[in-house]
Image (cartoon, rainbow, N blue to C red):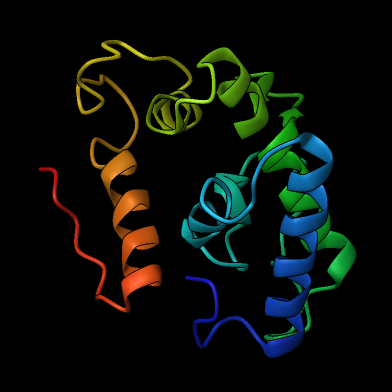
Length: 155
């Protein structure tokens, strides 16, 4: 999670700065559509689920010393997508899914998490991915706004 004991103050500042900059240049409001996503894994495993071959990661750096350039690259991969060299060769970012889904955040998150949307009316109806992903992100956002504790609501 952003700001956890795994993320140092300089890293948190770099994350926030990169999200605001990259999301802004992609035409995405970073306040509600991007910030919750960076809580997926934390820096050691990659922001925005970017633990794919040849993606920028903070592994190999001392705790609290991940360079801002690596953090910015993770944010760019998550927002704009990643053209990998392995299977799957390409992973569209959140900007792609926001565009495809007409700005519908829930459907964009489902597409981002699984690579497709099986049923746009039931975002828990999936074959792969995290069934509760959309509600997890929503709960993180609401918790962040209201000071509540995060809880998964989908089984």
